[in-house]
Image (cartoon, rainbow over all chains, first blue to last red; front, side, top):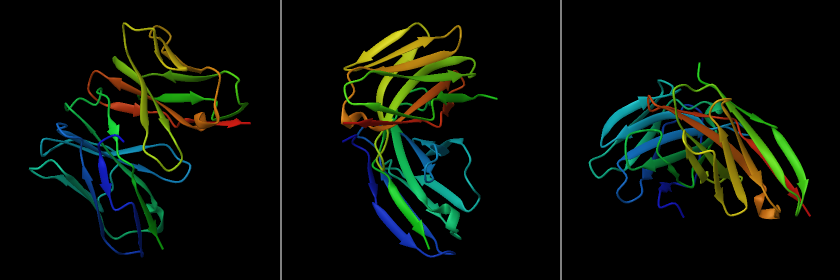
Length: 114
Length: 111
């Protein structure tokens, strides 16, 4: 158990819909990262937050947005969902903002868009 | 462009055998290199982290090596077990603070 929690574990929805994925980082970690992993693909970095502020952006679509709240939990919002958005979405956390630090990954949310 | 290439893409070995996974990178300047193990459908778990000055690091039956001059790393697994079946991901961090992920090597250990 990494100490990072993600909810829900599974999510099934239809095209065009909007969903919110939630992540709670490890106690003491200020940085949160979001990754997308499509079937049989590598991890794709989406976005990073540090202490409530956006720190770095990766290959995140405009239909996707995220935020980190004062209690440090983070939410990833996916809207106008398409079939291709079906994937595992992982959250990770680390102590400092540097991406060179070890990141601890949550169990992931499996999103299925029908 | 910073890149991390892993080989082989997939590997099948018999239980008890050793194997070595490769990671070549072009990330520069270099900060550290991390190996993760990812079981199917689960989040990655860190195995080793190596900085520029370290050329080998062990974690149980896993031993990672780093040659910063040739920009190559390897992950050696000794006396493989069925539970070693997973994807192994190489991640390289640059000094600018960004990490580049490899696509992973899928290892299957058969009895």
